Image 1 (tube, rainbow, N blue to C red):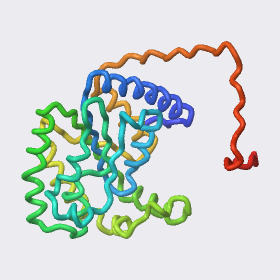
Image 2 (image 1 turned 30 degrees about the horizontal axis):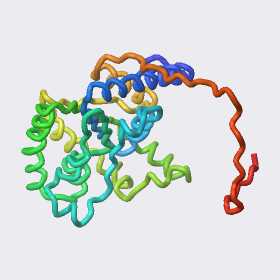
Image 3 (image 1 turned 180 degrees about the horizontal axis):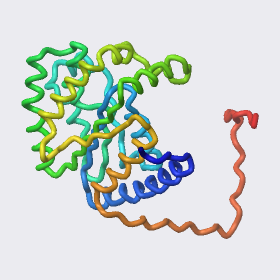
Length: 258
């Protein structure tokens, strides 16, 4: 049995690895690397929370999050992978995908939003596309966050009862508990047909969200390049005090209530 993860330990390790991630982004920028990290998993597995902790201290000009919604009419008429590939990083960038082209083999398949012929075509294309991306120099990392049926149901019920989390609920989420076994079968085939040497899947036990966040961050730091602390910019103290500027009457100050 794993030892208890205390709040103090979690916060200490989170802060330490967030500092390392700042160093990592500088290495990615300096070396001109292109890094894409895919986060997939069951509903409520904690993909968004993990991504949030990774990006919290990073420069948004270097590290971007891509979380695409329902495709537009124009996007539906495109090649399936097109809208995702358009958002891959350029040199010196990291892109984190909060769900990705793997929607086709997961939620779209289970919920009947695509045909089995479209799923089969996806399985033919995805490994070859990823091999080409990796050969082109892209660093591609794929994470799957997994939760048990019991834990998934508990998190969904928490969202129902918490007004601040109800925005996370959707009709698809409501179907997740009843379709847990359907998703399990789809996930098994997804792993079997798309976990290739060039871009393997990394499976994360996400039943404990805080452990999952730390485990993903530690693993990501191990996979990516060696880092050094960035040079700190020095700021010289001015020799005189700044002059106050009289504001025009059209500028309205926000009331100071606190």
